[in-house]
Image 1 (cartoon, rainbow, N blue to C red):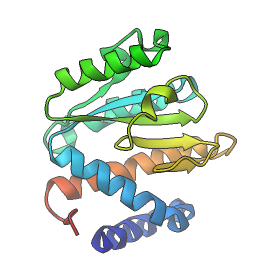
Image 2 (image 1 turned 135 degrees about the vertical axis):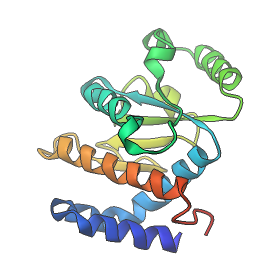
Image 3 (image 1 turned 30 degrees about the vertical axis):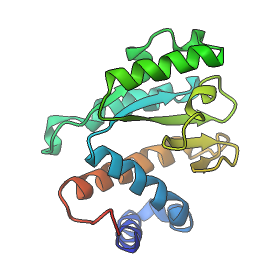
Length: 181
């Protein structure tokens, strides 16, 4: 992980307005290492956002697999598109049925990438697994990256974090960094 931590710091310092991220790189790096390792293993990423960050989920989906990236297309899908009735699930039995369906649909594995507030109704589902990649607003949640919804620069920070995550995926895919150490 030291190699990834060093690379992350160098990438942060390449961007003039990204210095805020330097102090958070220790929280960020293990989360990203886990997510990228699973992507490299062939797991599917299901993107989920709360209502306020739906724009960002659409942005992710429009930018992640654009052909100009010159890399393989990656299995990222919006969960609400795959399962439009997501908002109607309330009981633990409903959530277990959805989990079962996703396990059948993605036999190589899957995890959720959630961007949103900690008290949104979707967190009942995304908190069910420690394997999910969580960008949580306004609360400390174990194994998540914390952001503040009241931050006037939140939109810019989300875009910067996505850029860093996307670059990390690329160095992982092309073997420029060993994610096992």
